Image 1 (cartoon, one colour):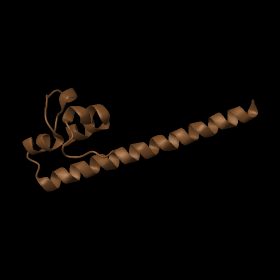
Image 2 (spheres, rainbow, N blue to C red):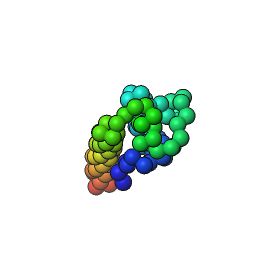
Image 3 (cartoon, helix red, strand yellow):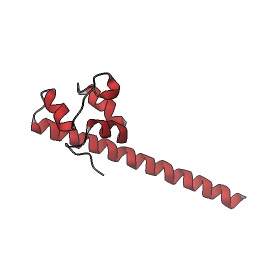
Length: 91
């Protein structure tokens, strides 16, 4: 599932915890960062003065980070499966 501009901030930080730090660095503090924000990612970006092009770049970057994390998790899972398979064969 991809992150889109109409995702609610609450859902974003719950489903994609890494987004909290990313948004904080961009100057968009969210619920857990101390500044309660309600509404969508797009709303939060516009409140901080980001234009449509910048918002699209933020969404692109968030999705790239998410994809990289998913790839890393898959690699770790494959490694774990290889170790478990090796142990099983030895026993």
